[in-house]
Length: 124
Image (cartoon, rainbow, N blue to C red; front, side, top):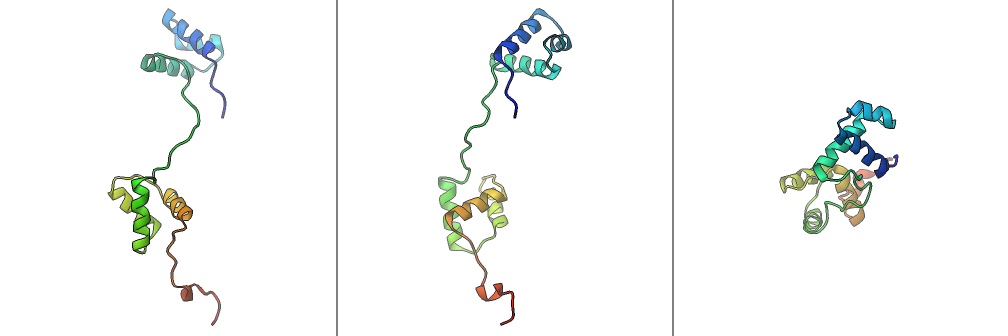
């Protein structure tokens, strides 16, 4: 991913916008795309700053706390399928995808295995 443009360039572009220049003229003069100028102008109106937002960072897991406790108990009490758990979580108001439930089950060491006799592939 590329780095954001410098604040100096952003401020020069916004100074030209406030002076009344067109977006396309500003973009051509500063060798940037017109969409950058319009997005920076919108950002300046909405936040009061042209500085870029944070890129990256940590996103906490949805399946933690009370949701995790409920899911652990649910997985231990009854047989389950991951897609079924996704639907049950959705009914409880927790939006989560299949992969998140799979990762949770894997990390917890919780899984439902069918009868071992039925898993044999060869003859008796």
